[in-house]
Amino acid sequence: MYEHRTEFVTKIDELRLNLPVPKELSPEDFNTGANFEFHPTLKTFLFCWCHDTKSETLWLYADENWSMYTSVTSENLAEHLLNTLNNLDPEITAQMARGCGVVIETLFSLKSERDAGLNNKDIDHLN
Image 1 (tube, helix red, strand yellow):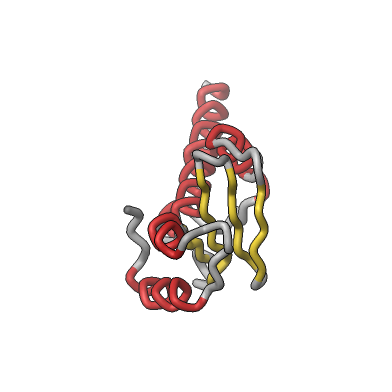
Image 2 (image 1 turned 60 degrees about the vertical axis):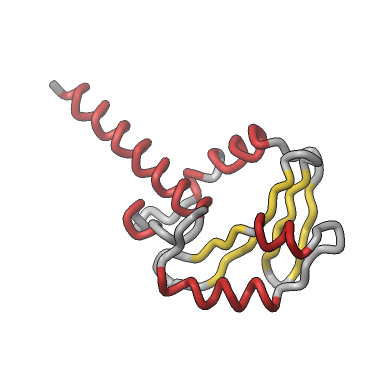
């Protein structure tokens, strides 16, 4: 199970109790499958998501509303998320994103690794 920063634990508990659960999800499926994402510097709640890999359905809660997406495989979800790397805040580091949610932390970690790889290639090119 993902480990959030301690400062988010109470907020996550509140969200679990207060977010409306989509009718297609049982409360148990929501409680075991919900993932919560937070902004690394503002420390605000960004979104909640649940991905049912069997039915290939993704539920996304943001702006006080649930959206449901069908035919979402783990592969095309990962591809979509990777396509967002260039849009991430350049001032936020992987270290700052640690504990802010599995998606946020992973994206900033991948961005940092990619940027470090680009920098190393730039340095190698100069030698």
